[in-house]
Length: 264
View 1 (spheres, one colour):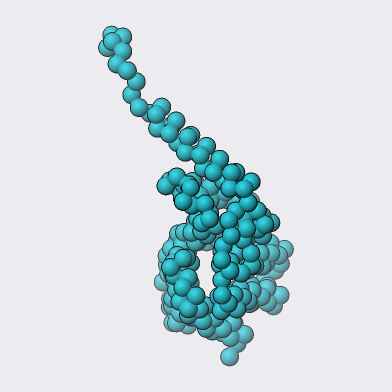
View 2: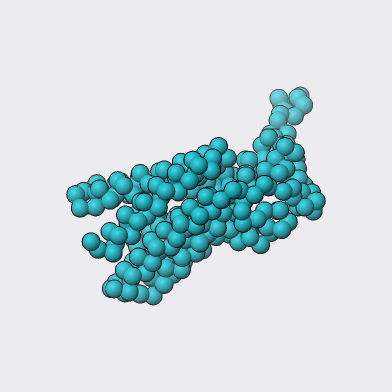
C-alpha cells in the first residue's frame, strides 16, 4: 500500500471519527453547517477514492468542478456560521439583519484577498483549474485571518481554547497555513519527489487538524463569557452604523414629492 493511499484512508477514518464526536458534543445544534461540511468532505473523499482508478479523466475533472463549486459555498457558510457564533454573547442586542453584515464583511474580505491569492497559486495551474485553485487559496487566507483575529483578540472577545468557535478556527487555520505555505513553495519547485512529499505533508496537516478536533470535541466545552464592555460597545456601534447606512440608501431610492415641473 502506497503512502498516498495510507494518508487518504487515514483522512477518511479521521473525518468519520470527528463526525461522531460532533454528534457526541452536540455540535450539530450549535454549528450545523460545520457538521454537514464534514459529512460532505467525507462523502467526497470516499467518492474520489472509489473513482481514483476507474473514472475517465473527463468525468473525474467534471466531478472535481462540481465538488469545488459546492465546497466553496460550504466554506463560505462555515465562515459565516463561525462569525455569527462568535457574536453569540451580544446577538440578542443586535439588529436582525446583522448576519447579513457579517456575510458582507466576509465577501469584501474575499474580494480584497482574491488578487493576493493569485500570487500563491502555482504557476503551472492553467485554465479553469486556476480559478478553482485561486478560490481555494482565497478561502485559505480567510480562514487564517479569522483564526489570527480570534486568537489575537481572544481576551476582548472572552473566548478561550476550550470554546468550540476557537477550536474550529484553530483546526481550519492550521491546515490552511500549511496548504498556503506548500502552494508558495510549489511556485519555486519542479515536479519530482520533493513536490510529491510536500503534497503528502499537506494531507498530513489536514489529518492533524482532524486529530485536534477529535481531542477538543471529546472534552467538555467551556461556557462562553460576556464580551468586554469595550468590545461590546464597538460591535454594537459597527452594526448600528451599518444599519443606519442601509436605511439611508433605502430612503434615497424612494420617490420624492410630486413636482409639477417634471411634467413639462
